[in-house]
Length: 577
Image (cartoon, rainbow, N blue to C red):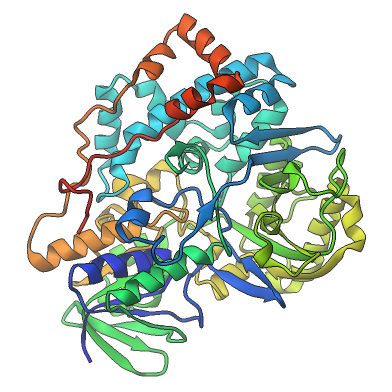
């Protein structure tokens, strides 16, 4: 059987693209190398009798338009929130919570700095304004960088562009805050999957990219997926199959079948040929163009440009099955809010900078900033009774090591991270039952992420918008006719968002029908500035707004103010087909 479209890889963007294409009447096959769909957005039984979000473990960026249009809840997707968003703990036992409710968060920050609490509200307003300007670009082919800059200039927001695109995270946060506790917590979101540290220019955009997510329409919040992150991709797979998509697992693709400079299908590693009018790859740009396309099919100059795509910056996961919750410094092991959100241990700006110095030398740091999630505290289906799933994450790791390989140091490295963990939760020394380690090399070897980069490429301005990952292929089209890319290495970038798959599908459908690519939400409209936003632009307004925001009685007003701006329907009825 021949197909209209063959999709390489059943990661979330490949499945999103397959869904939109099938809904438009295309005959689609998805080919996945592993025996399970999901890519890096997957739930697996890494340790017997327990389930784990292997790589991605928080749902904060998934576009609500994609969830709604593909009816993912109807196909089993269930997302929820815990009461606490973030918890950061330091070696001296001091800690800071960011709560789902703004008033609780402001009162928490006041324990360290009343000025920071006031500025936190100002900072949130600025970040929301930045997100409102950029959001219309997410679900459409990328604009040029000059168009984006011009848009900020037209709105009188040049300084906002500088703050959240060009600055380093340290420079950005130093403009607003004085507390090392708050700056250490917020810095984390700027160093995810980067080759750099807090002082690296451009990390402010990485911060903004992570922080403008939403949950149930609430800006800057995130949720969890029932059963782990694989709940997203399992729902996508079920939705795709309901529209006739064929999904084959255990079917690694060896190369794209090319005739006369045009893709005609794929060749599996088994030697089987699958013919299709269009091929779209969910793999990262380097793997898609250097690994799956024979060398002679690409112009040498272009091939050199692809080789130069910056995919440095990796991370690792350590999954621990425990029979007692961490008794963090200052707390006991009784289940509490310190166990329910996204936890950070030792998140000082200095630790991030030292990690960057080690990363630059292809070495491992002496001390780690550890992120942790214990989803089993609010999803008991993940672990047997009396046990919990404790997932650790380490950012700012090199892929190549100055001495040895990741296979050589896997266990000794994991031992050193767990020793750091014991500084913050000494009781765990006697309560770890089993562990599973996923190194940067495993991310490449098992999950297909070249260089262990979960974003399939750096998220700095030289690789954003119309230059992601290169200007020549930013449109999702490649120099090979009928061969497209749809992974997070494309605009708008990293995270479990679904936007790249959506956008690539729209380009493919437009090319196949000879019509224009849907423009999405128009970017000529000025982002709405509501009464509360205007109020916060004045000194007295900010003072009054802060006093209201910190009062429990005014939670409904704060929730209303935090609503994400919604793009207008793309064809009048909210349906992107």
